Image 1 (cartoon, rainbow, N blue to C red):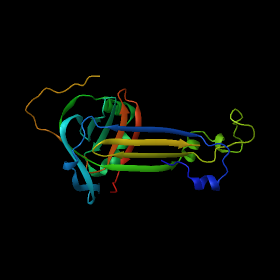
Image 2: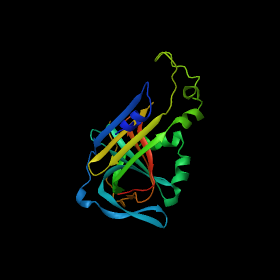
Image 3: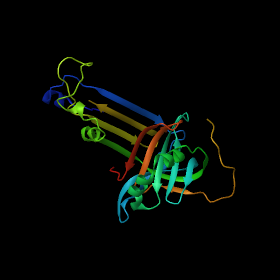
Length: 230
């Protein structure tokens, strides 16, 4: 994953380039069978859909059903990390759901570990995004580092300031598991007793929120999948 290209080095004069990177790659604890993957509709809006590759599996997953959303937790190999998906019950509700997920409710959802049998269909997806963080940093009060008044005398002699602060994220999820990277430049499980009950469906065929977390609920990656391009 290239954060700064050779062309940018040739175009701009860098005195210092600072890079911070995070990389994650893991297989699912139980992989999805690619034979069951098929083309299905993914609704970006209630009446607008695209064909995507949907993976399918019936197994024990972390699962929770609330009035406004469903939660699915898929463990990665070793049970040290998880992918959680939060799926609004209405196709158009992704913005309202994300706005009401305050810290307390989010931690409550991501701390769930009880599993049950679930019919799961989730899309293969790839997300790659580059964001310029200058304005975001200035909004939270970190303005001086970007101005001519910046003081970085502990780093180098002479005048230095931050020109650009870039953040790039890459995430790919398929039948094998997930590969994810982010960079900035500049246990025991509870299982419900076996009971005759209807097996719930978790069908992620419209926009959803995802988190990759550690066993202690530290969030490594998060994002919103609004549409999928094959």
